[in-house]
Image 1 (cartoon, helix red, strand yellow):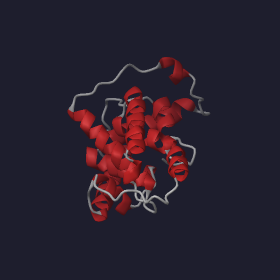
Image 2 (image 1 turned 90 degrees about the vertical axis):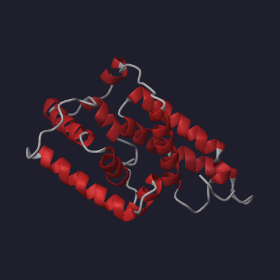
Image 3 (image 1 turned 45 degrees about the vertical axis):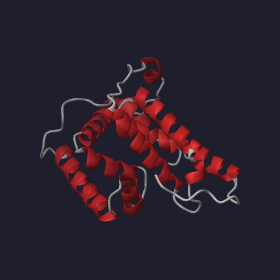
Image 4 (image 1 turned 45 degrees about the horizontal axis):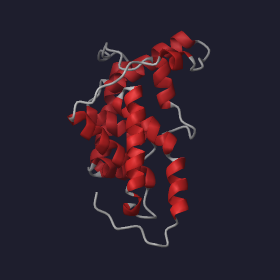
Length: 195
């Protein structure tokens, strides 16, 4: 990632504060991107460590969330090419997640939505996560993926349309459960209400 070095007047403490503030967003995006909780935690930590080591390449005044998501995405695809595998689900942590009223109905609806999301193509799912969940603009999401903003807008529109067809019964929802409802609920939740 070629960038200009950070000017000497850019405060080291400000970079650190901004990076720390975005940790929950990076962790949430990592969980949604790779579908595997234990691996996602390691992936988020690795991406944050890479960002810290490359802090001199960050350009002050640009979108740090977009920059971090680009590092995370590149790390994810690099590790996928190496055949990185998951560890088992942590049942104790799963049981500790609080449950809402009407949990079974809510869990079924959420499970359907998560399965529909993971039933999309990788490009569509990634675009929806970056724009609809993380709150990035189409242009910022495009920078993360190395695509024009218009391409991201198209991917989001096609992905939403496909999800709606699946959720309205027009197309079958994939049967394989990529994520359990309690895990999905935690993945979709963050302190700011979005990634």
